[in-house]
Image 1 (cartoon, protein in one colour):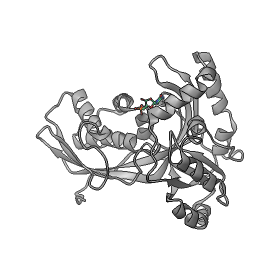
Image 2 (image 1 turned 90 degrees about the horizontal axis):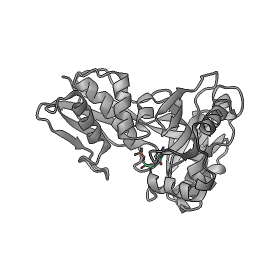
Image 3 (image 1 turned 60 degrees about the vertical axis):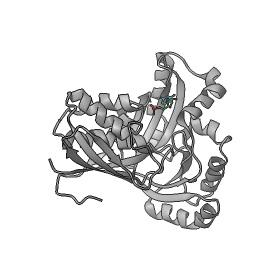
Image 4 (image 1 turned 90 degrees about the vertical axis):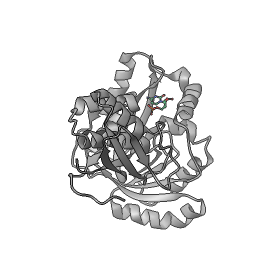
Length: 318
Ligand code: C5P
């Protein structure tokens, strides 16, 4: 089998609403997710020794069974009952780690798609979705990508009706020393807001319907201005994490910003712009202050795709 290359895009949350608690202990969510053109790359090579070897030089990441890529590989070959399948995987990490950008989830989704092709399994989209759900709440979305409504734990995907509106440009920032644990952020949300959580499918469905028919979806379809973005985790994380509060304050002063929010459980933050020129100008204007405060920054574009497999070819190893 030829080597394969898969791209694993980062995502941001255009909406993250915590509806309540589920019987499985996870939170019931109503989200709008959006993929970016900031992506990791996985280079895959088949081996016949039953070993899954992951290399990621220069990144502070586990490369053993604690890495979601390795877990995805093990899950896929266990599903097809072929333990002799092996792979060497080189990960080029570009998405900041522990940032609320679903980098690990997207890498896992990319591993499923890439190894399915590399090993010639063709398990089909339904099996990939089921395996993705077992790997993490964001992994099914990362398979699909684009602009999507995500309900349940995050795995129930619905398309966002597309319209005339072009996808926004994004200025993304993250403080390299900041990291937020996702379970901590959800735990804090439960502590602070648990008393107001909704319960029951009827109440959840009302909120889903409000999102489907609300101003954010209208704006994404080109039928109105972008409303302020809602992220319920931001409301609890911003007062606790100094770099999140400082970064949001900086982005709120960005000229031309249409909206500003934290992504996922943070600590990465973003501003949306009408186009790449506006994002670039805002970046240039804020660059001295961002650098002084120690932030890393990326000018990105929203994209309409999730993990993507390059056509099979003889490809050079990194
Ligand atoms: O599914 P994933 O492993 O990404 O979730 C990480 C953690 O985030 C969970 O252990 C849980 O604490 C929290 N979480 C949640 N509700 C969700 C998704 C994640 O409480 N819908």
